[in-house]
Amino acid sequence: MDCIYSIPDKAIYIAFFENIGEVAVEVTNTTTGESYYEYVVSADGQAVVTIAGTEGEYLLQMTTEDGDLYEGVFRIE
Figure 1 (cartoon, rainbow, N blue to C red):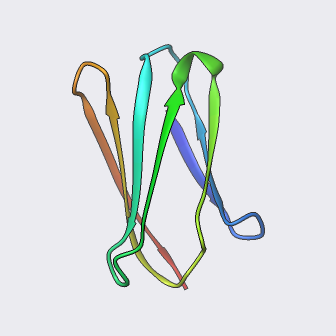
Figure 2 (cartoon, rainbow, N blue to C red):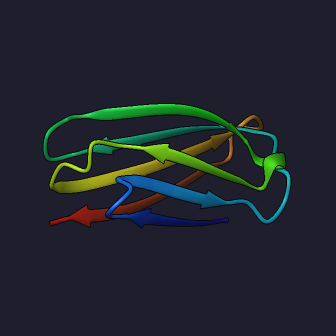
């Protein structure tokens, strides 16, 4: 999977390259404590998670139905 943050859209675009089932997506601004939760279906091939776009460090966590965890970090300045 690939994840890209779009500044103008204030959204994270997720592309799934294989069906890994339903995925719980959690995005946390570790600077402010803001959190966003979304359940997406990887079989759709893509998903969009909209966030406030507040400046800070973010932790992106995606957990599959099987309990596999994927993580990434990014900063919005």
